[in-house]
Length: 293
Image 1 (spheres, rainbow, N blue to C red):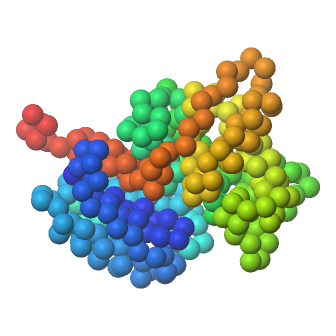
Image 2 (cartoon, rainbow, N blue to C red; image 1 turned 60 degrees about the vertical axis):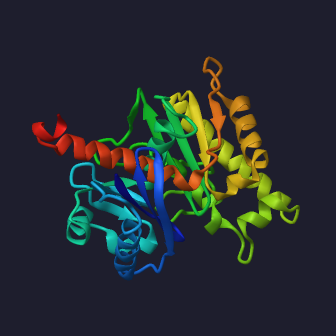
């Protein structure tokens, strides 16, 4: 059984997972300070009291780049600057007496959806999360891409879409995320308003065009069998999915096969499911031969 902690953009989501079953879950608001760690630990301990047996490991997801060797976060979303360089495995050992695995949130979500979710048992997949930013992850031949320093596959939102576009906080010019994400909206405008009303048709069409361009580039890069579109805005359903799929079909390299497009029915559990898989694998790999028998 695994304790899963997802440090999200607006909420820290927690779940205790036994196999494929969520036995307890909760969430707390993000404060954007070291107090988030104490609050997450307190909520985790509360959830663990609701279970019938103790957890075996902890899975932690962060919205940033994770060093594949040390498990420390190399670069963070601004709200989580205080996590940069922090040894979260030691934190988990101190707080819960359990070993931990740390992973980028989009990569964890991809692992969750390809293990027991909307793309179960698919070995070639791309995940794109739309919302506050554009989170991406890729899997080829059943292996999630991490690369030499942990950056592979997760920077799809920072592909250049417009050479004359704005400078992104990442330093690049005209990133997809700089052009079509929550923080790119005009002040006072919400993503929900854009996609559930006709108040901002120009913004809606522009965002869909940018997202379609980003996904097309990801398909060209990784040749997936399935593209998983996730994020709160996908509650708008085909109003978001269909135009992105149509854009990819129209602009895809001629000899490529169009991937299947899926939207997870429970996107809020994607990250936790992936963390559970990763944490479970860690306990198996570190078990003694006697424990594995």
